[in-house]
Image 1: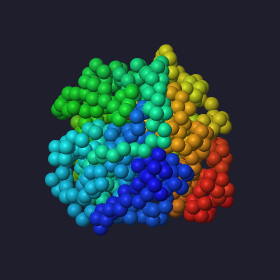
Image 2 (image 1 turned 60 degrees about the vertical axis):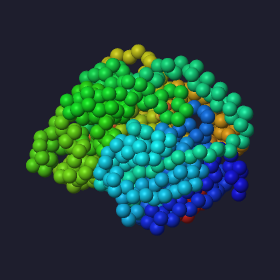
Image 3 (image 1 turned 45 degrees about the vertical axis):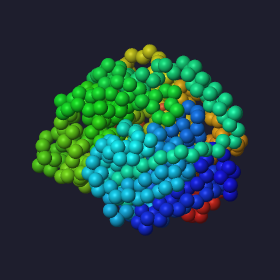
Image 4 (image 1 turned 180 degrees about the horizontal axis):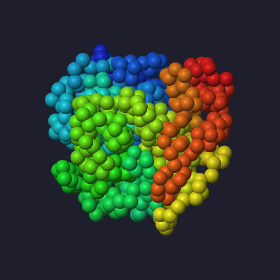
Length: 635
Ligand code: SF4
């Protein structure tokens, strides 16, 4: 195959076996592109085909895959996205995580769309890719360093034009929710991808590329890209979105009563004006910071002064605010700033969830002071600092908490699993959903565990509409009592539509925020995809690819987890039996029988059996004979 057959792509997969040192480049297959588009689609297919069933996530047989999409690296809005995938050490199932910045474009310019890492290096190492040159180099001098300082050191050694991925001590110590960092503040945060890199003895990856990408119709691509920038800039939310970034949603989440507070005990934090977007602006922000080609940079680079010291930091974005400001109840935006998590290489979402669970356990007398080493409390920065530093190196209590809430609760016992807030072993993110049935269903069925980015349908539950975030947060609303959300079959339909739409951007290799948050129309993406790749796919056709990917990742779970089924789609008992004690959603909870009805509607609409297993007929309809063969249990 000639490389130019695949316009938009580099046309190659780079495979590096860290055990043997073997480096191989192979052509990207037409079938992979046709059936899975790129990014998340490539990750799902390669993991399904190449990770041996039953492999231990920390074994050399597991893969860490880094994949770009056809739009990554081209001159169009927000084309800096890269996708990471592996078998998760947090859940044991399918895992992926998306990251912005500049790494993906550099990987493509260096001549490959996908990097597949297998094996395990026999000493601490880093991988250097400089166009055609690929070397596994020793990294003892970086081992033990924070992710940010390792990135800085490699930039000093190799040059500023290298794009760097690095893990911190948490990845080295295989904390099950360790992340991969890039660009001094961007992370592939979820599902423990950093722990898998650590298990392969790989501290960092550096890439520099100087090649060109083939484009099907360069003049049309240039015109379509230019028009896209112009149209995004004309959207009503454009100038409102950038200053505060995702932190701007903090007020709305509190006023609607969906802000996780004190380990999801409640859903409203009275001090939210001290940790909201305005606080980021007034107390932290120095400048906006964005990914490659982003017209709406949501990153906020700033300076945090805390009682424990000063730090320059990107963030905090909304999820970090929710999990540390709400769930751990830290009092001010400076305390919430995520410098320490970033340096240690910890996912702020899981870290905040695990720490808030530990504090609740301590308050209830389930984990004694003698085991922790000191008292810990909600609202206390020194407690959080103390635990983070121990988690990252698995020291003392940190070794238990490094396992994540599901495993830690299984060890602690005494009913602590009722308030270990996760699905499938992945900690829940920044939305409390006891009065938001669609969003609850989205969390329960997300294909990496409890994560919001697969389907954000709070607008459907709370505003009765399928609406952009900008429209939601710009409406005036006082923090009064919410009406009870209605359970109905179209909750399942909205969730499924969203689960096909949002992850599609991860396959294309662009940011979804301009579409989801500003209402930038879908036909632009179909047009950009056509003029860059030469492949005509309507938006609806692309959504069918997204549905194929969704079913393939479900099949991965079925294959990898013995007995996988409906029970894996349930929330912790807190959400089905404890009413929210105060705030706008006071008194609400979602009884298990209501959730069962939601799951019934969802499985039916997806063409899965009553236990949530894709049927053979569904898998064949979606062109997935390999999955149908692998999980013959589906009927
Ligand atoms: Fe990156 Fe944020 Fe821009 Fe998306 S909106 S491309 S995440 S800076």
